[in-house]
Image (cartoon, rainbow, N blue to C red; front, top):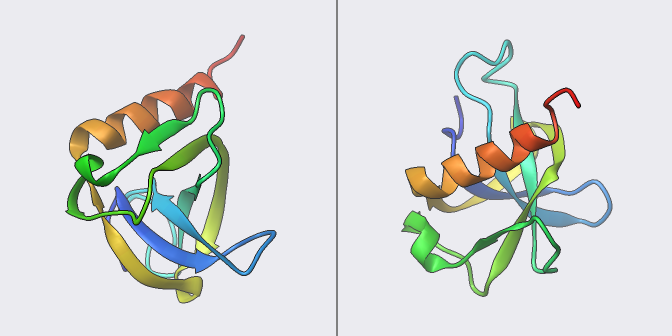
Length: 107
């Protein structure tokens, strides 16, 4: 796997050229060496977004406060992944994971 679960990297965006992404898939992804499941990171603060600052990283960090959009889940090809920004703490990744599950639970 090119990037481990919880890694934050710059990569090709869906709307603009590049944006940060958090890897949420693990080694069970059927094409782990070719693609991974990710959530978007933005500098726009929105309700229910998970805020990120350098205290949320066990390695690396962000240049300014950013926000993970747990409703913006997509798959990215590993070939489109560029510079690694860092690795989130386990606690931060768990918060993101819990927020993602809120959007996937049956009503």
